Length: 145
Picture 1 (cartoon, rainbow, N blue to C red):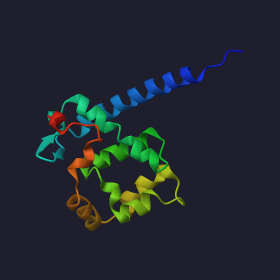
Picture 2: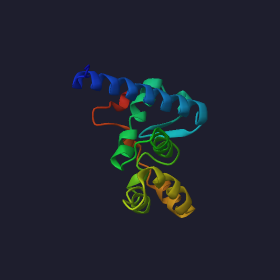
Picture 3: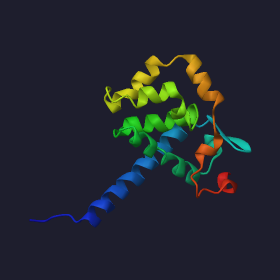
């Protein structure tokens, strides 16, 4: 019987992850091209950002995985929420209470978030927008444009 090794499995997941990130980037370009991204010293529309920057940011779906989400639709939605609201939207206590509620199936939490979160909370999220959250520790701010 043929069995895949751990190395083979890892290669499969790496390819799947890379393809998923490309889907996220394509979705952002197609549906949110005019959305403005704030950086520490500038602001850009998504369409103005280099694709490699969006690829790194699209890896932010790992934050969604930390809340138990695994469906591609949920992961994309999480990244889109980061883009259209704030990269640190999940730091808001009311938002976090919804997306980390273990009584709710992880894939249903974002739908619940939209239906249960009022405009005042989204305004708080907007006011607490932290542009530094777009950058990983090793990310060079000079490479933002």
